[in-house]
Amino acid sequence: MAANTTAYDKVMAARAKGRPTAADFINNIFVDFTEMHGDRRFGDDSAIISGIALLGNIPVTVIGIEKGHDTKDKIARNFGQAHPEGYRKALRQMKLAEKFGRPIITFVDTPGAYCGIDAESRGQGQAIAENLYEMMTLRTPVISIFIGEGGSGGALALAVADEVWILENAVYSVISPEGCASILWKDSKKVKEATECLKMTAEDLISLGAVERIIEEKGDISLVYKSLLKQLNDALAPYNITQGKEKKLEEMLKKRYKKFRKIGEL
Image (cartoon, rainbow, N blue to C red; front, side):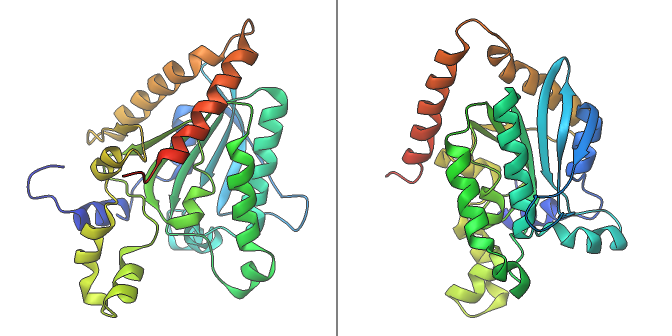
């Protein structure tokens, strides 16, 4: 972390107006993105965008939590707070990716899953839990990239991955700093102290083993897109094969399981 940069500064950077959203990353990294809609149970959810695209010459499934840019778009996207149908839509695309052997790349940017009565009545907790369960055994590579906020189960529902990457000014935590301050101290003014306690910055997460890679933000966002394109190509190249693929997938699943079992070990 740069000198004099606090954890709370990172939270503010992750929430900054004009910060690129999932749609920006998808449109600038992938080719021929075709969006898919609906969960085939209830409806569509604009907070999550998903579809198929090309990463160089590799067909992939791409899923992102989208906050939107202007006020009208943010309202339509529910400020990046997904409903159950959003998570079920994402899972439907993941299962199709598994069926056709496409790697999965997710972009996470959410304060958390939507906690309204309508979302709860349609099984928000069950939808998130189902994603966690199914993602652990998906027989295709999964890479999750945190590009802004990563809030609680709403973020984790798209982040049970072989590798979790994070932009240097993004954050990832079990709860928002505001929620933590309200619970622990009953005082919203303690938000800065809560942010430090939560260990939610990229540097903290690397040291805890919760993420594998920090993506530098070099001021020019086009450089970030180019860097991610190269790093994704390099990471997925070993799986873009036919000979010995099943053995490699078995090894991948064992590694994924061990990765999540060891998080939090002292």
